[in-house]
Amino acid sequence: MPHRILFATQRYQYLKDRLLSLVPEWEEGLLDIQDFPDGEHYHRITSNVANKEVILVGGTIDDKETLELFDIAHGCIQEGACAINIVIPFFGYSTMERAVKKGEIVKAKTRAMLFSALPPTSSGNKVLMMDLHVDGITYYFESAIRPVHLYGKDLVKEAALEIAAGRQFVLASTDAGRAKWVESLANDLHVSAAFVFKKRLSGEETHITAISADVQDKLVIIYDDMIRTGGSLLHAAEAYLQAGACEIAVITTHGIFAGNGFDKIKKSGIIKRVVCTDTHPNALAINDELLVIKSVDKIIANYFN
Image (cartoon, rainbow, N blue to C red):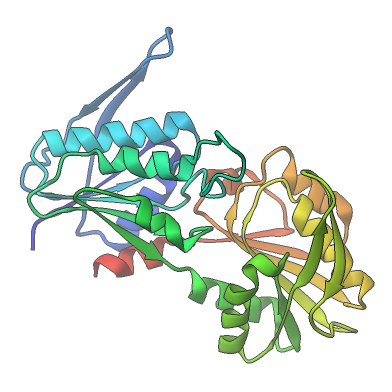
């Protein structure tokens, strides 16, 4: 087995540190990074990567991060890495996986095509992604790249049992689109599943018409793959409360919390706990007892061991 060396983009150094603590035999990859006044960025790989298997962690959380991830990956291949594994905990633009209106750019596909353009290594290129919004995104990768979809199912189940603390609960989703995934989790946990039926009134507004299960006097734990602004989540939470739920908690894989999304959830007062993972660095900037963060470090490390 080739020697493994671990790199990370600037925003994902925290996950690199956690992985190195878990797997100390991995070498720490070192970079020289400088930002210039004109907006350009300098990257130099100062570690020797020749004939080594590179593990590179970085999310496509914005365009700058995406290009940094691509540049470092390309640099490692150029310097002679025998294999490269690009770990993307949060794959950005995953909700733009298809065109609804004429002329819309399917950015989930263009991002996949970008990484597919990397030159092949002798032992292969892989992209590892976590809890994708749509499974089909893996099919957008082309050429010599092999996509791998990692699931945070065990973390979600662990979080649900911790929240319930022995109480009976219903595992719920924000809409019917996540119903199959939530039903699978609920079956594993031997609890009931619920989801809401929505009627779209406009591009920005939906109306909840029904709930699929009895939640009267029950703890409802809502799971969604991501929380961005929190709007859809709060609408669903309100619907479950109106249907008789006694308490609402939330689990999400990707805590993006854009546009003061977390503050909106906290100020609503209707959600008693939020659990997310560390796939997105935004969650780590929040210091609030309402939020519990679980790391995906073991899921990533276990894949390689």
